[in-house]
Image (cartoon, rainbow, N blue to C red; front, side, top):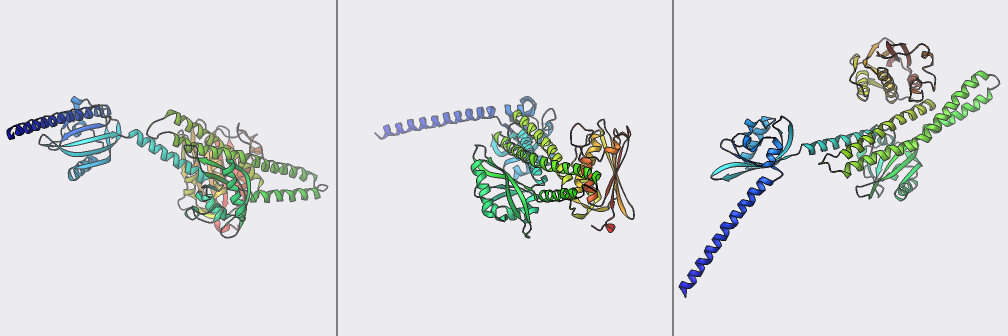
Length: 523
């Protein structure tokens, strides 16, 4: 009986060993198939001499080297590494740690095309030989998509920050989640102080402010919601809020995007316009000629106020809706993939934004023409100021820019007003050179003033047009309302400066800005 039991035990052991051997063979077959069929590039290289002893089909597709070209050669011989120092760092890390995960590296394909990869490796023993088993994934397109998303986010953020109107986002519980610089200025609090606080706390009537954003969550939007916004130092500004909800990728409302338009100056302008009209009525019999001119200016002012009011609302809705749509586009498409439909949508949205910016400039010109100006003068370095304005302009490659500005030279100006003036004049100079040319900006300082000259080599201005340049509603352009130079001259004069233009057809135009030296200013 014992002999029979031993024999049975031996048979079972042999069967178990055979099954294990079979399973190991099956496992090896599965491994080989997985190695070959993996969508990720896999390589095996000897540690002793760095020679590749095996690569899979994904490596062939990624690099362009055939299996025969790769096996028996090192990655150095193949010229795969973009940066040999990066290779040395990866090799040393792998040897010291015996494992390396998700390391970003840069390689060349056989055609010399640079690609960005994610490298994971481990030291393994194969046939008594230590080897480096590496899995490499091409992440070039993903990195490009991430960079494009970052650029888009930065662009969106710049659009928010460049707005002169206070912009704010509000959570469903009424807490502020983000603001722009204009909101900081109008409240007197910094961004990190505002975020997380109650939106309604910054108004003279908190209950009305709370009812306003609650109305947005109920109805989806609100237009021209009147509030009085209080600065931390106590002074109050009258504003009109336009707001709309924004949603996540599944359509759930997650907050409110709100923009405030300061109407304090508009009210003052309306009051001044009313007083001026009453004064004209008193003088009608004595100064009939002056009255006609004044009535014309008053009509322009009234038109400016009405157009500005009527355009601001739909324009703000367009800007807000476009911004929110871009957020949706970014969230609806997977960033790992290039999507032509997404790119087309983004291009269309950029076109809408550009045209909205142009419309906004027209509205700003109209309002600047009508409203009273109160410059806030400050010392500003001339050279960095000009460079900043040039960086914001789209200058064609066929236009060369030359600056001859004394380093360290400064002038006393209202930063916002002078930015408007110079941006408009430089834009005019660029438009005057459709076939290219040279834009030269120079400065000189005398005992009593700082002189800035903007010279182009463009089409020039005919003698018949020169006397009308500073007349409202006169323009030679297909687009625009003819307020650019008028407003620019008015903004300059409000700062104590003056503007003159000299031009010759087919030879170009010279614009001269004269600002009193800061020691001679009494503003």
